[in-house]
Image 1: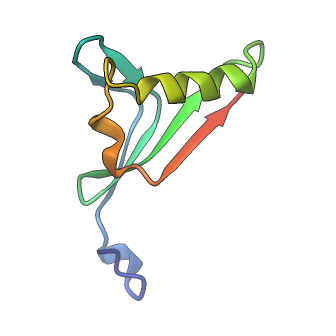
Image 2 (image 1 turned 120 degrees about the horizontal axis):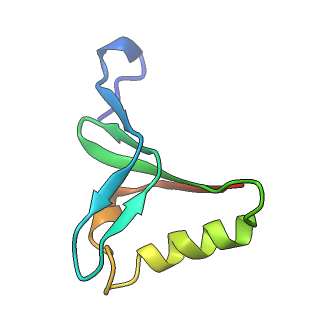
Length: 81
């Protein structure tokens, strides 16, 4: 899917915030797309919030009552404080 020999030929996009509507609306911080498929989600928190809280939010976002189908293609999940 990704052309490793001709990197400029690939289609990449980054969305600053992505809101997914469902049972509850959830908003992910930067999401990296390759050919329109979400590959990476990064949860950013200010320095006064622990990385543990960022991780907990990423985990809760994948619960069925939130946006479980949305991150199905995500290969990299990061939590940053």
